[in-house]
Length: 269
Length: 294
Figure 1: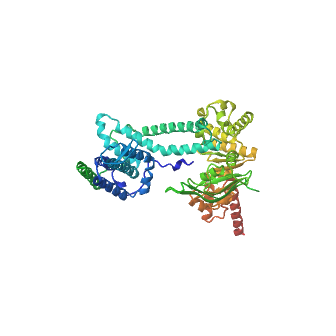
Figure 2: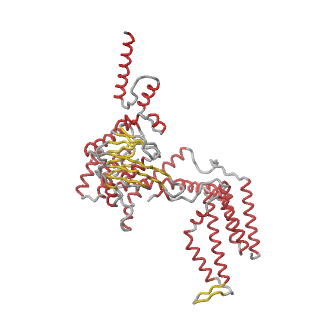
Figure 3: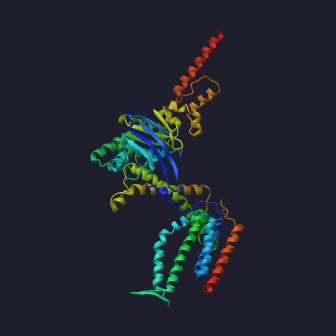
């Protein structure tokens, strides 16, 4: 078992125009994209949304295969939603009727659009996490939520907690791997036995792991205090977020698409 | 003599088939002989950790074989498990793997897993504690109350208690003060003598290696470019330097003297040898001067 093989988040390092966009732009664009998806009504507006998604994926250079692979865990939900919509939509144009089920033309369309909507929703948000490193994403979120600081919401602290957690996940995975190897070298067996035996076998792994996590936390706290860290007030950052032309263009484009799709949807297209 | 541990064309690739694929070992033929004190040296990322984790069956070779006393350790799951007890592996900073309530219980974890009876476990725990210099009253303490150096002794005892025929230690002296280094190396030597066990010491300190091991294997880029006595290996001073390893400081001084045109034997690495080499060089020069006078 190689824990190292687990991919974290799903960031795909790259240098495409999509990767280089400001994380705030991408976050806002995804929000607009999601709103637009819910405004879309019929083939025309869905076609526009599909073009936007396909274009973004093409520019980002993220392999379509990886995006499709990410769909696996939601297959069940998609199928379930499709069936629900198919059978319970109501409508007048009855296609098939058997036992207690009725399938109408409206139901078929509804189910189809629902599936397309969910899949596009997921692909769009995946594209965000595929092209934005978790740290940048946190920075972007902190910046976007910063107006809430006026309401005394601890935005900086929350995003610091998130950054640190993200930073330490790989470290802790490596640590787990190491301790597991060390205990296996002393004959520990993590893979066989019943549930209780397995839980007991985890003890030699969990105790050292917790101790080391606390040790690290304490060391980090000391190191931060040594450098006079006292919260977000007046702090500058290593990675400055800056809006560039491409960011304004992207935002304008997504805004236009959302309004456009809204109008199309209003006319039932 | 037949090797006790041997690898044949051993290769290991991490994350095979993903974009993060990395070859850590590439067709390695490694041999360790019964009763020898062997050193493995290589810088971080050279593949030395991957190599030692193959020697006790923690990692499975991507291709190639690992043989313990001539038997492929992956031929049967039972043999793989037995190999973990016969080839003891002490990881780097082993004190971070302690977990039991008392030192005694922690040391007995390995022997318990071997399925030994209580009497034998007790004998082994006490013998192992003796080897690493732990006092009887310390056995009932919590390992977390001990100092860093003592914790490391407990962890090493935990592996020694399995009484392995081959004992592999990855940087056992890292982060210890000079006194701690000496005493741990002494403990290892005691175990080596008492059990006639094969010791494999992994380190990147050339000085430490030069003083302790009989034979040295250099790991670099997943291959073993040099092996031999420390003296033989240190003759490749320039190549070692290029691998980021370097030779003991003493050897470097003598290499430099040689480069400056002094007629001196550059393959020294201990103070005694250095003394001999300097005296030899001076004697030669003296003779040359005498001849000049005549």
